[in-house]
Image 1: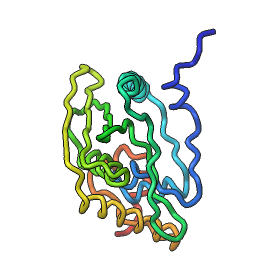
Image 2: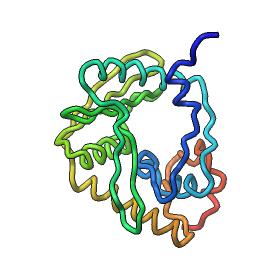
Image 3: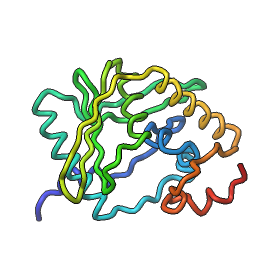
Image 4: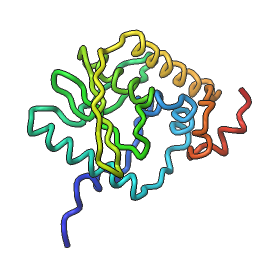
Amino acid sequence: MRDVHPALRNLYSERKRKPRELWISNIVFCQRFEFLNYIFGSSSKITDSTLAGAYLHTLIQSYLEKNGYEIEKKVEIDIGDEWKLVGRADAVKDVVIEIKTTNNYALKDYWIAQANIYAYILNRPKFEILVIDKLTGCYSTYRFKTNDHLAKKTIAAAINVKNCIMENKPPTGRKDLCINYCEFGSLCKHFVE
């Protein structure tokens, strides 16, 4: 039997949530998603597209690691009441690099917010987002300066979710088409805003 590729092992391993930790990648995507994910856990299914993304991540991270980057760098910041906002930056050296694999080549605001908060917490003045089209292999690199205002906005969102969890009241969710594909979509659309 052949060895299990590390990308698959990471993908299939349980991502156990520690108490009083909120995940950066979820906070920047949708506060209500992180609220529901914290309470119920995730049941995301692994698809061929997910596997392709994990494999591309691993290839690029292997290259970056050989060039002196720290891979999967743990990032965390205290948000009060013994809670933390946590994440893992894909690659860190003098800049933070966040890798995004997609079937839709458009740069997303929440990707920028995610990479920005990583750079802010790690005290890096710049970050890059590498966007790779999973179907074609085409890629673009977007470079940004770390934005303190955007980072503080992300921290405020995390504090809001923390407070909502403590009060058992869901925060506001996104108001776009994500409700049609979100694992919590059928539950989310019944909340009154």
